[in-house]
Amino acid sequence: MPVIEVKNVKKSFDNKLVLSDISFDVNKGDVVCLIGASGSGKSTMLRCLNLLETIDEGQIIVLGEDINKITNINDYRKRVGMVFQQFNLFNNYNVLDNCILAQVKVLKKNKEEATEEAMRQLEKVGLADFAKAYPSTLSGGQKQRVAIARALCMNPEIMLFDEPTSALDPEMVGEVLEVIKELAEEDMTMVIVTHEMGFCKEVADNVVFMDDGVVLEEGSPDEIFNKPKNERTKQFLSRVIEKR
Image (cartoon, rainbow, N blue to C red):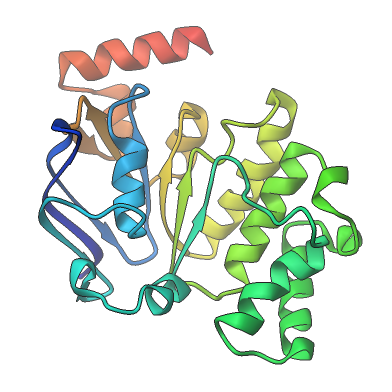
């Protein structure tokens, strides 16, 4: 039974169709990578999954619930974590407090419980020693790992990643992808918008290739990368792999 069902979703901005009849499923414990050129609608699709955008037509069912009928968005976001391109950390809070804040405010945990969970997750991403540091003193890769730890502190059932390495210097990409690989090994259900094709091949259970607001092709990494059927998929992959 899928934990995410995207059915015939359409979304426009200022009369420009950005998503046109998008459908795909995500099963529990699977990693689904959305790939495609910039402007193909991948990030918009992800934002619709997190209710940062509302769809115009179609249906999105997450964990058995039609998310466009949800009245308490905070309750929904406890179950579905999101990591952004630009980290979105609070610069006036140290690393530990960044990871504690939502636990206390949204999950209503006491400070002690929240601190314990924050340290556990910071340990997991290799940053327990930086608990008292402020975001301004961290590298891009460290900031993104804090953002992942912060999302994990909410104990989500699903994680969404919007191009988690696109704002990083090349040498920092690996440390963030390593953390996401570890989550995949723990069977965390994830939807990841990414331009990292090697990572996608290695970690994805299913790959969705989007182009100009539609799903052109979907399949296993082997099917998409080694035996693509659509001419546009072949062009995109040869260009991206050549560029890398």
